[in-house]
Image 1 (cartoon, rainbow, N blue to C red):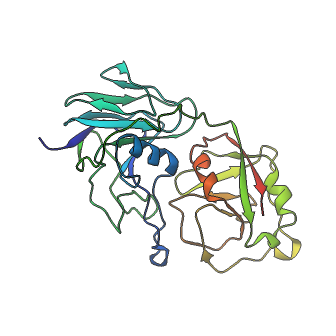
Image 2: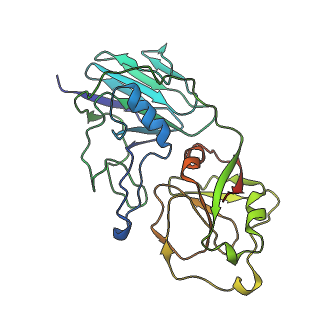
Image 3: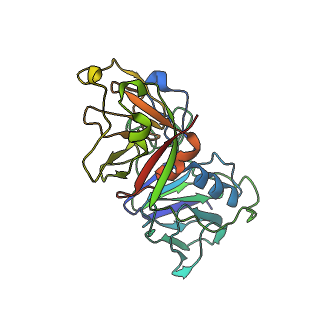
Length: 290
């Protein structure tokens, strides 16, 4: 019997993601990969896969998959209802599926992205060394669709529950550590302005989080920089770019590799997973660190 799963229902959006394709910025290709990398790494460990194996990133749940082979699966990310043939199965632990059984995810009450790992990993065709979908460059496998059969690789290890733990509940407000620069000198008081209260907007996606303030205020440029713009510069994941509106954009894994607006600060890599789970309306404050 071939090792496959069937996508019965992808939910609002389901993408194949692994840990990305870093090292191709000179080709204009962003790193991509799972936005909440700790969640995907954990899911893979739970089913016995190497951490870089490809899994499913499911936006707002709703994913249903049917096993066409005996396999072990694990769901991680925010708290979400998980069932197997209608019976509760739980998250953040290995679950065995027999051929013909269907795993279903509900809609998480908080957070955005759940991760499904399957023993053997998703064996879709890699591009530039990764199986990740990049929504900006449209590189990698297309979004998963109803009725699609997805091949699995051979099981690589013994599923283990040593890492099983309760799912973390994303907070309503995040305090995010950032390193100021390289263009913080373009702004009047960048540390203080960034430390104020921001909200994630509905225009956010895998490319970046767009932020606004309920009171309508924004980051203030120095007077001598008000009518000045930059030639394009390289961008990193986590860069906080500030267009003329003064409303920052935090670039995530599918970000453009260059940009012409000043970058006031960069989010520390270990804080990116929390931003990956920030729904519209989530509060954000940035804390400048050394």
